[in-house]
Structures are given as C-alpha cells and as structure tokens.
Image (cartoon, rainbow, N blue to C red; front, side, top):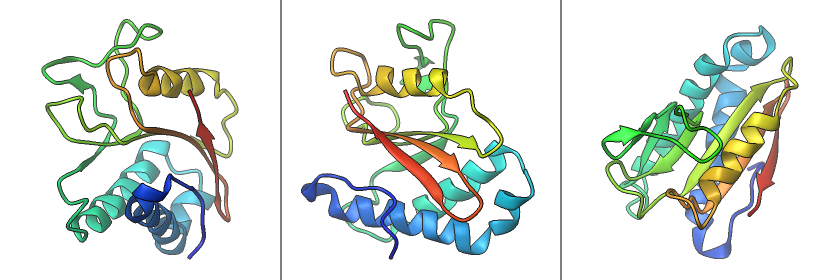
Length: 154
C-alpha cells in the first residue's frame, strides 16, 4: 500500500485507513480527479471510503468522518482567524465533543493555488491553546496520479 501520510506509532491503524482511502479514491474515482470535478465531490468520495474503513476496525469505528462540518457541539465552528465561521473539508472526530478530535484535512484541486487560508485553518484547528486541539492536520493537493500530502505541525 502507498504511504501518503505518516502518523505516530500508536495511530498505525488510523494511518493505514487514511492511506487506503486515498488508494481507493485514486483507483475508483480517477475520473473525478482528471476532469476538474468539484472539490466537494472529490472530498465526499474520500470521506465515504474513509468512514467505511474506520467502521471495519473495532478501535476506530467510534469515530465520525465528516465533510464540511460546521458545528462546534451546538454552536457555529469558529477559530480566532475565522470568526464568522468555518468548515473543514474533512475531519475525523466524535460528534458533540472536542475531546477526541483526530484529523483535520484541507484539500485543493491541482488547478487551485491559493492555499494560505487552508494552512491557517489547519493551524487554528491543531492549536493546543484553541478549542479543537486536533491531533493531526494535513493539506492535500489533488494531483492527477497521486495526492501530494503535507503534514501541518503546531
């Protein structure tokens, strides 16, 4: 299996699931990637594959995979740099709590180059002084043949 992301050793099952979801996306949905279909359509397919893979693992089935999730428990999801609200492309978390936020991912198609806001959003969501404290953050550039994935650190 291709290794697009690497996580800490204790999160090996999660790492395998994310890498397999990328593999499935690039195997099954190449049409979306090479024909300039909307980012939302692509991230939805990726999220669907990821939720299925997490659901097959006893240790991971308790987590939710959401696309463009805009709630912070029962309020609008905001950060210091996005006071009017924001919604990450993909998150792995437990709904209704900020105690188990695992991964935030922002995606851009190959034709889009304005990534600064996406990087800032990821930094806000992984900030240990912030509300969300996601364990991992990734920026994904969706190229034709493979995803170019960068881990964003605190």
